[in-house]
Length: 301
Ligand SMILES: Cc1cc2nc3c(=O)[nH]c(=O)nc-3n(C[C@H](O)[C@H](O)[C@H](O)COP(=O)(O)OP(=O)(O)OC[C@H]3O[C@@H](n4cnc5c(N)ncnc54)[C@H](O)[C@@H]3O)c2cc1C
Picture 1 (cartoon, helix red, strand yellow):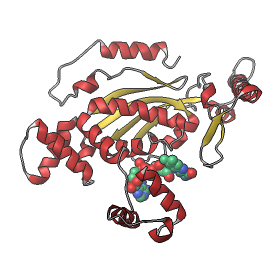
Picture 2 (cartoon, protein in one colour):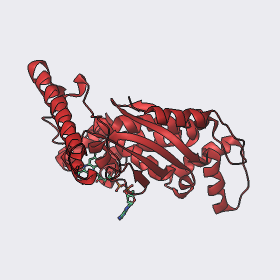
Picture 3 (cartoon, rainbow, N blue to C red):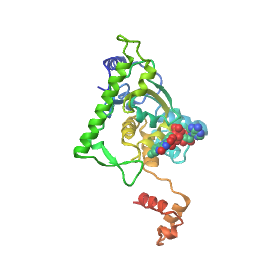
Picture 4 (cartoon, protein in one colour):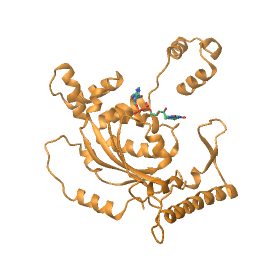
């Protein structure tokens, strides 16, 4: 169960007591506020709070030019201009606070994004739950032969069954030993801060994660990308859906210029210009390495 009865009661109480406010409200985000969105087998994402909307981005941008409020059409155009020209600080005027439940090995990748504020569940103070990420069969894949940092085809037959059994039994045994070590039944009981070191990295942790929209886009650009590990990508994809409803103009510009766009080196751009003029450009006369050339081919489809 991704959410405890206490957490569900807290969510229900928060959703049952709406308050009026003079602050900017995003209708799209209000419907998501506090709700749980399950991810993986025991994880979730939920919005605890947010600040700002598309208009807040424009409001901040216009202070640069000393101009007042403009029409909604102009807001979208301005946001697209800001995104296109990397004028990023207006996007920092929006913030989001998420409650995330995730496996520890996913948390290790996530925490590398240093421009957020984090408060994590304390396994020194509290006892961790018996909840481990066990991949669905289609995610139980072999090492990729073309990418050292990736996975290939799903394992099948006896091998898949054996791996699944190892993951489940090791997790269960580690947790049994964790409980046995911290137990104060007829013994002193090992400190929680020490007993946790024996737990595997697929155990779940939880944190509050607060980040501004500019840095969130950076996170999503890297982690909702097809090259990101599946287990963090599914969280990023869930967050993308929330952001699309929260700041629709900004998200659309992000999809267009960042997720769907590409950055070309000067050499790559030169190749494209030569191709457009009808020149037969090859890797040999491109001035690019074989790998750069291959990546350019992928970008150009
Ligand atoms: C597909 C993929 C594979 C990866 N593989 C590895 C790996 O093998 N090993 C590994 O260690 N990491 C790996 N990473 C993590 C990666 O190197 C980054 O640490 C991570 O993506 C966070 O990016 P960031 O530093 O830009 O983000 P943030 O920490 O959120 O920083 C955002 C931006 O703020 C600025 N910034 C923040 N802090 C500083 C600082 N102290 N000094 C200067 N500028 C700063 C930078 O401009 C930075 O881009 C991988 C990431 C991805 C997406």
